[in-house]
Image 1 (spheres, rainbow, N blue to C red):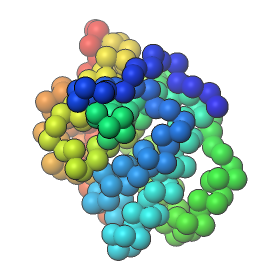
Image 2 (cartoon, rainbow, N blue to C red):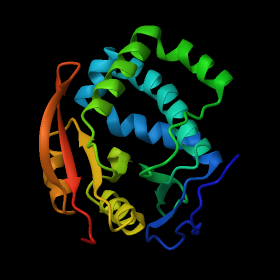
Image 3 (spheres, rainbow, N blue to C red):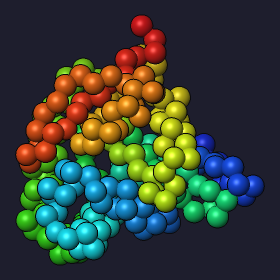
Image 4 (spheres, rainbow, N blue to C red):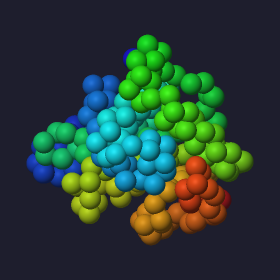
Length: 216
């Protein structure tokens, strides 16, 4: 499998969090933490339309497909670990001006579709299409997905991952993201993001956030 072209760091063993490049073998665990992180996300709820336990199960398969595709495409992805050497947070980033090819493990994706469900998959595709239509027209670094295990909220893991993205992003380009959680606006504002608009996706309000380039 192709690896992200970024330095690898050793997981924390002293209690201090450590950031490392996503490893292939971490994919199932990362999918679990993303499902837990997004289980109450309004847009995710609109896509899966299922009770919590069933939503978590379907989301796990969906995030496994997404993480595999991201990894195989060679796009940047960092995890953060605690003293148990287990990822407790992850951020997926898409480079600006990257190739527009979709990478996937086809057989795994087809198998996952049986678990996700056709209707949920269709709503997911619709959501992705709407989101893409509201992205900026100029090149940008895309902070695609940021998730921290709910049991680790309030410990600064999310901020450390955002700071990693900002360090790695080209200074001449803005960094862009969307969120369907209004309470996330103040978190990203602390990192220099400003709200540039709002749109509706599957009936859910979604906010567009942009951090201006560091180099003008």
